[in-house]
Image (cartoon, rainbow, N blue to C red; front, side):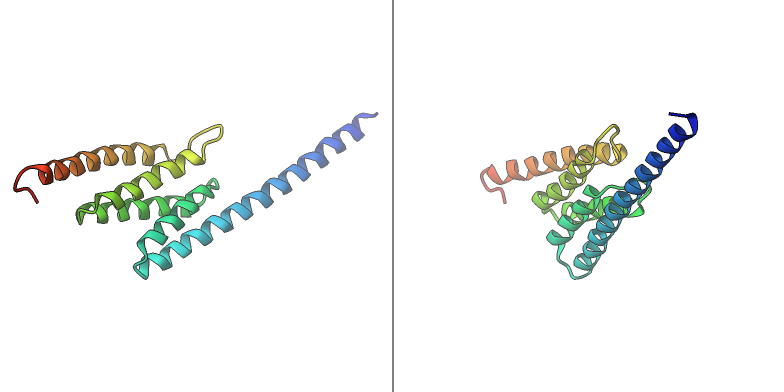
Length: 144
């Protein structure tokens, strides 16, 4: 084989690889964005549990440079904060754990969202402590 044929072979292979990579990225991006938008609709309608599932699925569809990933993470954080402030610690934990586990699920050769993972783990610990205090007070004689 001459040098020109080898170069053409590798060039064509690279072009095919880039096209296939682009197709996967576009499909992942559009699926993740659709889940995010569905989560927004469920959030506006007050369907918090469905919104949590949508935002979690959106993060699972991680695509580099996709703005919906951080937006979904922020929404899960806000939902967790809302449940926590209302004293519904079980659902608060569900939201924070969905946030954490979604980023763990997207790991490959690197882990995206490490700041969100750390932040949610710290908040999970705080909620567990608050939940334990409430349960301890209920167990006391005359506790509510």
